[in-house]
Length: 292
Image (tube, rainbow, N blue to C red; front, side, top):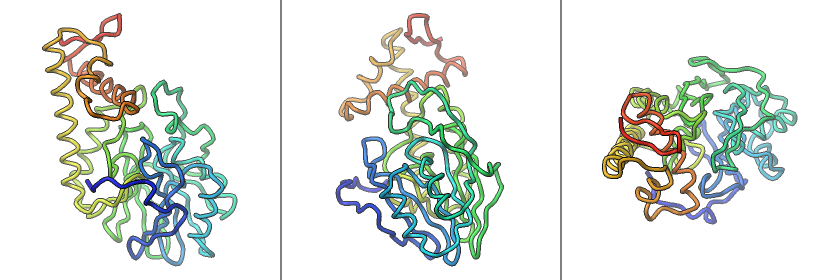
């Protein structure tokens, strides 16, 4: 993972070329959960696709239109429907005349702490991509790779011409992804991570953070981190017998920005649900957890 970047040092609204087929435009929505902001990608040369159009911000939509220029837009693709990823799809589609394709609609009442990542109820795709389905243009092909876990509808998009993978929030370039039940699922997340580990992509373009040039090493590290966290939870419950999630977070996330403790609690809950499904831990009626 790359060294931390000050969001103030990252210019928004500017088209930045990353490869012969890939450019990005940073949205002006930095936060403790989005890092420097949501990165929208423009793929192609003579005609293009737009990936993760981001928040419905007039400034950002204008920047995307400028980045596209006069080139035809074949599709606007969304990895998932959190509010920092998909709301700009509809207004951008009206301007450039392109279909919205990608993940399935998903709207849930999320009791998690991430107000910036609530589900986008306005998302209406013209076409839902199943795993392995493609969108193509002149000299580029994007293939949907189903990666549930962060959300149940999450897709990555593989650019086969450059062996690149647009990873949305499944793999980020600055932090691990928040897994927030009821829709976020740790079992699915780990299965999806293993799927990426088995692929031969040479670079990841995440929605938050810098490109990842050694993706398999990062995925292995993230999977190892999740296993370590699971081990911490099990050891904590062995020591204390029974415990509430906030007590686990206070013990395991010392030194972490307190603003992130709520999100950390959601990931701990996701681990506990996974442990429950495997018969390792179980919830009590008063909200505490114990080992089986």
